[in-house]
Amino acid sequence: MTNAEIKQADKDLIWHPFAPLISPFEYIPIKSAKKARLFTHGGKTIIDTVSSWWVNIHGHSNEHIANAIHKQALELEHVIFAGFTHEPAVKLAKNLMTILPDNFSKVFFSDNGSTSIEVGLKMAFQYWCNLGQENRTKVIALDGAYHGDTFGAMSVSARGGFTKPFFPFLFDIESLDFPTEENFEQVLAHFDELTSDEKCAAFIFEPLVQGAGGMRMYSPEMLQKLVALAQSKGIICIADEVMTGWGRTGTNFATDQIEANPDIMCISKGITGGSLPLGITACNKKIVDAFQSEDLEKALLHGHSYTGNPMICAAANASFELFQAQECKDNIQRIHNKHQAFIEQLKTFDNIENIRLTGTIVAFDLKGFGETGYDSEARKKIYPYFLERGVLIRPLGNVIYLLPPYVITDEELELVYETLLGFLREG
Ligand SMILES: Cc1ncc(COP(=O)(O)O)c(C=O)c1O
Image (cartoon, rainbow, N blue to C red; front, side, top):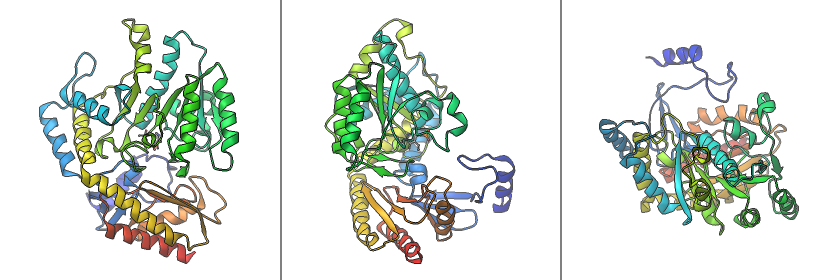
């Protein structure tokens, strides 16, 4: 098909995510991609600074992952995961156990970040049911959170433009102010109160960095205090590592930077290196013990058709091998160092504020854009500005951030930084 034919058919037939049907933007047909670069049908190159929605940690069209999928597809492409098991799934579980907290003992497979959250919530609720405490139904979540688009995940996410039509269908939660250096004492006192409620079941959080909420960052010390306090009262702590996992914050998982371990971890995005969709909900022995029963009523009655798909597990195992290699660790550190140096340049601009860095994520806020939501004027102006210059940057309201694939080269990073600085100079 020609570039024009693809665009027309897309416009006629396809409903894209997170966008009005009459879109201010044209969808750009991408023909191929390699490492940090996307190649359009029209012959342009675009540097992907957002790892294609934060999934693509090893870069695009990675050969090691592609070969693993190909090989697996010819041997066992799929099998029902009820009543059967297979080596790729078992191997993945074993691989995960080598990087999950020591007291973790089981993994549950689903299809994406949102479903990993659904499973995490169901595990937490049913944990209390299985212990005979059905009244424990309250969840505490951080203000500004984004945990996904299914109903449970929406319920524990911030109420806002994304979820407005569904407010009547979402379950109530307790919202905790986002912790900052200024408000932390009050936040901790409020958290103490909320976790003392005998109806309190779980605390869910994006550790260290709130992604879609605007790359908002908070310290490991604060997170440690929150998790330790919740666990001292037996509250189940659910770490949503969907975005922060796989080295994004500098450690394998963001919660590796605190002493306490969560009870449940939700993992997705980077797990297959951005090749195929997979959600994992992992949990510790405490959770597992509450389900150790032959009684079907005490079983977690949840599953999806593609649960544990062998090709997806093979992709995740291949991605895991790349992730464990020294080269990947070096790249994470290299990007962090480059961002750090870039921050010094950013500090010279007075049209931005809140410059922040965690691991491979650098972010700052643009001043002077009144509206800061997803659909803000800032986004409508900035997104096309960078695309025209061959750089994919998707601002979150007035927040500009970089979250690149780990294989991005120094030269590509320099080009992205220069383009950003040029934009800031233009004011
Ligand atoms: C922290 C977090 N949790 C959950 C999700 C939902 O993941 P998915 O889009 O794969 O359903 C996202 C997606 O951006 C996320 O950033």
